[in-house]
Length: 324
Image (cartoon, rainbow, N blue to C red):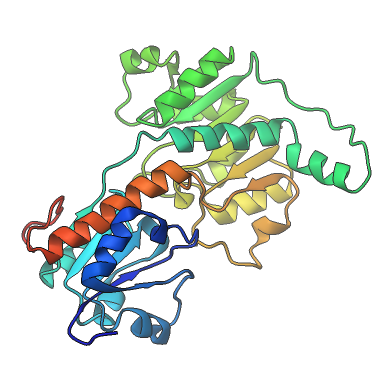
């Protein structure tokens, strides 16, 4: 590694995908690039990885970058953020330090929509437990839930929630929706009826969470809300973990309510090996796979590395903190 070359560190490339895109080779031609494929935990690990980095490529929330991490990266001059959601990134601190942050465009949300239904069908038809029983030589007599005619409640009828609603409508499901800015007209366009959160929880057979994580939605589904759900109802969360109170959810699931939960997102990611959710039979767990499909990973890494090249050339693009 040359001491006078620009140094780029890619954080949390769990999928080992970033080196497959063309723009990676373009960056390697003008800079030294290190790829970190695991989560950094201690100050020592962070300092070793990013201490002399001039640019980092962040994969959304997988790498929190706040005052502590900035302090451990004194040479940092640029952040290339994958995606546009930045609750993990202290943008004000980046700006104060004169570090511009570029983001890549959002995708259509199709991959998260598809995963939502994958989790829903896995729960409704008990596919994980049936598959495991078959592997063990049994012929599992599991009785599934028919989705036709059931009521799906969508929390957050935005870019992803509206697409979920339209697919559910094609499956002949009834639709309820709620959201702070949702209107009757927008709900009707997606085939849904706008109701309060309490009504949605009380009347839905399946509840699917698609709202943004912010101060108002953090802990939106807590002990009280879980108790309002129908006995045997299913709950899906492919949005953000902290929207549902994890402690209340574990406590409720241990009592058999809701009837089943499909999760792709958690308070802490990766989910700790000893987390109680891992030991519950009435959950289907995914490892934040909503975005992790070949086409989207390719597009995001390609854009992220292109942004690094533009910065090295002195003409950064898609900067979200121009004051830096």
